[in-house]
Image: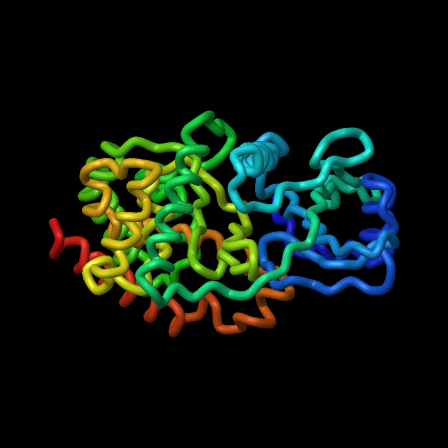
Length: 327
């Protein structure tokens, strides 16, 4: 089902009433929206003078169990004293209340409430910064290994093929065959290396934009919405400032910090550029599902046109060449 436009029904009045009913917290003043194309995320100040963030999950994207597994991962991290923001419990004792609007299934929204935690963007510059990032990722993956998450996506060749199935019909007809063949050949060529690695719960989107620095407290991990089961190296390469071979100093420091808490499996570094290819395809599929959203159309008016696909095909060709050169 296409749920584009469903968020239009989330008026400030609906949001305020939902929060107060579920959590007993009365919002005051106005909402301030955060940039998010997948979900709708708003900040507000409560009557208790504390600041909160409420996240309304996009209908149809995740099952209830998948979202609860995200929350369990956050709770496990918090219990292990990792710097994360876990969701608050509602008056009913759960972290994922829901509302239904107008009896329409496409207007059923699950939502979660978080205490607001501010901070500054973290730009790793010194050797110590990169060691800290590696150590933090190592601690995260120790927690990630403690239990599974059957309702979450598993990063690997099957997910890449599933993403291709979403994207392929949308590729401009002039380039569709070449794009699909390039992707299938690359996935087939790399499937064995990726599948041979062990997998666990990982953040899934651990770029430096999802890490804040809180003066006097340290680093803070944000946005576990894309958590998945996958090889731990996925979280590590996303932290690098460029390709692994072009960031050898940062990569070495990351791995040194990581090794204080966890061991990276042999062969992990070898698949970094393959995982980059998989992520490019995943990102395309993700964006394609948002293409009818009014916010998305406003910010990406040329998405899906001929010129867009010329650029995408060239990017995928380049990445496939990088992978081929490393095999």
